Every structure is written in structure tokens, then in C-alpha cells.
Length: 208
Image (cartoon, rainbow, N blue to C red; front, side):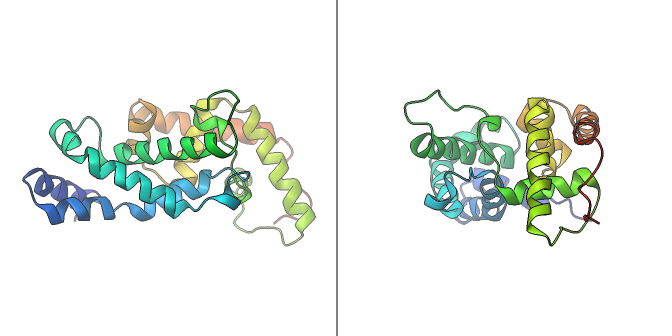
């Protein structure tokens, strides 16, 4: 049975050996994952003026320019390295449109989550798979979850975002946050418990 990252590993070896087609395929392989990462984190204040695909294209251009250096050193697994470049582009976008003249934005916690991302975390927190059809109830639910996320510890919040919104594996999350897969698994479960505790009494009436 092939490992999910097996094709990436093969492409890395081919690219390191000088295969130009493998270099292009290696970057293109993760385009959709990067786009999801940008889309789930794109601050609502920036979204009307930015397209996640443009952010990804800029990040991939950065990666192409730095790929030879990465292939020589391979400091981290490939996707977390690529994701970091996309994150840097996202921060620059936020600075340009929102934080100009204000404090520097350097952390994931300083970007606002779009409503769709909050809705996903709401479904996880309340352990139900359907969204309320009533707009007022849906807004109340999202507001409560957004407030709880704001009160959650930064590392706990980030692990939940990486796991449920970006859909990273424990190993990938460990590379992003500088931890181990085992520690990530423990933090993920504790973070989910803390989020649910902050939400307290459960979903609003009318939510299945």
C-alpha cells in the first residue's frame, strides 16, 4: 500500500537529481492544499479584495526560486515548507490591506477567520453534522464559537485550525508548530475539550 506522501518523496528525489519536470510536478501537486489553507484563513476584511489562487501562485513562485536550496538541505518535510511560504504571502496581504500603519502581524492568531471556517469548527465543537437553516441561529452559533476561539489559548486554537480546517496530519502539524506527532495528538484532544468547555451549555435551540 502506498503512503500518501510516497509520490512527493519520489518527486523530491527526482527533482534533486535534476529532473525539471519533477520540479514542476512537485510544486503543482500541492496547489489545492495551499489554496484551502489560504481560503480557510483569509481575513473577512481582506477577502473582497483578494483571491486565494493569487496568493498561492505567488507562494509557488517563491518556492520555485528557493527549491534548489530546499532540495539540498531538506530542513522540514516538503508540504510544511511550502505552506510556510504561503503563510508569509498571506501575512503580507493582510499587512497591505488591513494592518498598514499598525502593529506588525506575525502570528496566525492575528488573522481573522472567515465565517465558513468558524462554521466548520462549530460543527466539530458541537459534534453535529448539519448546519442550522435559520440564519439568526447560524449567526448566533458562529458568534459563540468565534468568541470561544478568542478565549482559547493560541497554541490550542492553532492546532484545531491546522487539524480541522487545513486537514493536516499529526506529523505535518508537528512540523508546523515545532513539536512531535505524539504531543500534537494530546494537545488536539485537550484543545477540543477546552473549546467545548468554553462553549458550555451546547448549541443554540434549533440546531440538530
